[in-house]
Image (cartoon, rainbow over all chains, first blue to last red; front, side, top):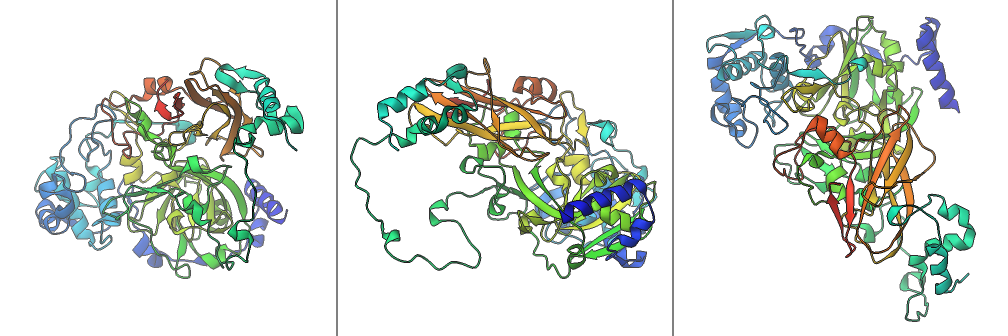
Length: 175
Length: 440
């Protein structure tokens, strides 16, 4: 009963939005400033929000890739024990292989995912320049950017992925 | 009380059938009174031909084992386990599937709750773990587990289902496998924790915030974007699973719980929530959980685990032991609310009997359904179909495939040709008693 009453109270205060409610909240969170969050603040949005300073190009990316990525994703992104990163036939149906070139709608996802999750055994071990360089290398391998293009916070969000318009929002009323 | 065998058979064979191939009324037990109740469960009560002299067994003739400080099940139950897709933790995702055919009731024991880990389960020190809420908020805040444990809490029975559960049923040919292999990536537990809205009330949120990006403390720092409206609907930061702290594989010490929504979005090992105007288009939402439709377009932001049911008893691997009485039972659930009705057929969908629903029927939770069945020993095809309070009916497989497609080759049973399969499952009962997976 106790919990239930509190639960109803919380809902009520949200609806009314009264300032009096805040005084009754437990208020046990510790305030943070942006500098304290910086190390964890790694989300990158499709418009480029969250991309850090730094840059990289395909040539640098190729060297890092050979040392840290090829053992799983194969030479030149051709695939190995894990997914290939280059090529892919046009998407036709559920048996089509989803690749970066034929499926991913935003290039920013590549930077975000490499930075948070790769290499698989040592995530967060790459610096931002290395992540930009690997992003440039993979986009260049797929001929989505030129082999001399530099990727940084300004250029990466402008890269248009081939399958950008290949999606249907399932339940628009939920968004 | 003893009832002569002859009388037993007379009683249960006289029960009214309500649908083809021997389906009995769901309240057949209740209406018949005590004698009949004994009678309809009679196939286990029928005296064996040989006389049996009852004696005390060894465990009745002396003290038993020391009571342990944390209980475990009987050693005779050691085979009731999850199946593992990657038991040597090779560098890829691990799946552990729930053995629905060996369980009953509505909630899943913690050790048998399904788990998907994309890079193993992190070993998190709860003293050091933090939940940070920042972005489009008035005041970014960090919460310790000890702090969250002092907040007002709520409990909810909620199923969790991987968006890829039941994916083998996209196969062109029915794959012969157990209900665990086909539907084992869904489970149901009572989750207890703090409403996310309570914490957002303390940080305050900018009216521009339309999404939240939730992130885990696991190696892939797994992240998903969630409409902020879900936070003010029923999202909680779960600290307890079936009364005890979360299992490591289910997000210890805290996870995001979004009742009724795609499992992958219920971020485990939750450490950060950033409020934003737009979704992040993370790897898992932009690529993985975007099922491809015939023609090549793909669904984005599916979110809801739609109304579904499947029969767990009988099911492949649970052989029938001769004609007689059986209870058909299974689970039904919907991400859109409560289950309102489950119908069961034993004749390939020609006729249907309404199943009894185990009370209490809770929103976005497993509902156990049951129908008494008198199997005459002949071929039968068993199906269940569920309806939810939002008005949705579980589709037939033909209806689902017409929209979503199917494979042209038979994929491995552990594969994920697509996601969000919620159509009817069919089990064929053979004369031998064997139960097979069929499309019907």
